Length: 96
Length: 403
Image 1 (cartoon, rainbow over the protein chains, first blue to last red):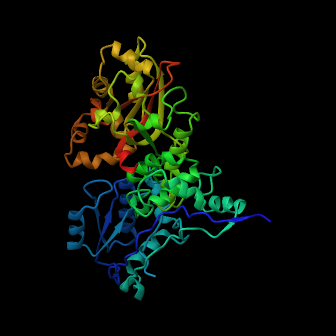
Image 2: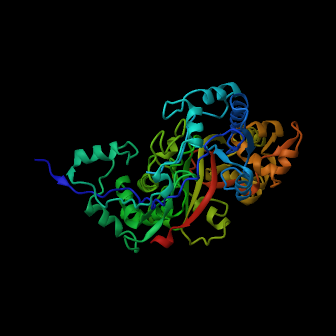
Image 3: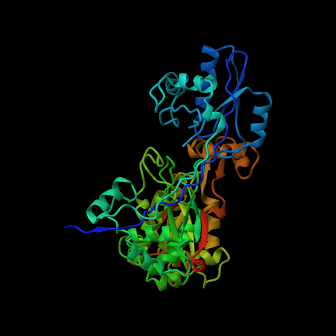
């Protein structure tokens, strides 16, 4: 009979998950302002521009605005405040 | 359970045409298989569920042990769970881990630090015992544990999830090199020394396991992978170098034992010398690399002494020359894929990027600051060889603090 042995689990400790309430959804998009937030990875400006054009062609009643954080991989509080002030929703591009 | 509304394009976005990216938008979500824009629009407009409004908080736990089993089955379990580097590991039995823990004075439950595969992800925490478990798996000896704990404490992962397939290369300085019998000579970067090999491997294993994984297509997206990730470690040949060791350059005492973490391993260029045309060779090499990741030069003592004979009696003098001669046209520099990540800094007026962006396309610009270039002396003096390895210094950690 082959001996059974006890070994340690090699994994670290995951942080506690702290739930956040999701922002209210929009009932319709017509007449609303939606920010398209570029994550500033290479070529994402081209992707975001294509997304803007898609809205212009398919949902012309939706106002879209492109926003970019000040630096790559950073939380730009000023940009977030600007979106909260006059935007109805935002689509955030996230890389990696 | 509350669910953040997400939609996924296929990879890659980089280097793709506008038409190709439009295809992503008009195509299907890479995860759900449903139309991508349907996922986007529903994410904006579909009513929230109760769980989305109330949120959900919960703890996650990691057991101390796995279920007892045979050695063969446990080896398979570790491999299937992707807790290994796909080479056989030493199973971390209670006895082996207890023996490993005798390599440090710190208690097993002391928190060592936190790691994560990229800045977007959550950081996982770990204690001395969890580091010791991974050290056992790598085949390390108890006396190596302070070095391994220092690497773990650095906050710099050896398992970045970047699509660029980075590795992290530790450079070790100070008395610990000789205490552990590390190799700074022939084959320093090869499989010829137990401490070099297993400490480097332990750093990789602990990074993937303590940060919450390094699983392709989940927590690892490196397109080509990186052999430096199996094991990489360079102890500097301080006693045979004509220059100050790396840690002393940074203000540490010669008697301090220090781990320096170089994030890179992306490119490796090699050469001999310095020969008669060394300046041309260096200029070509510096212009040819991926400039987002600055160079870490590893020079055999023969090369270092050769540069001293040419008048470079300090590393700083040679680094200044290298920085002055790492040149590209602004057009080439700003066309580089990863340099795009620096463009927002340039637009924001942050130097030296702002000046590089102001340059005309055909202007020749310097692409590195002296502080970004590093030199380490290592090698067996059987050849006047040097390597230029991608490596940005991301941190240093005291080894003595973990004795």
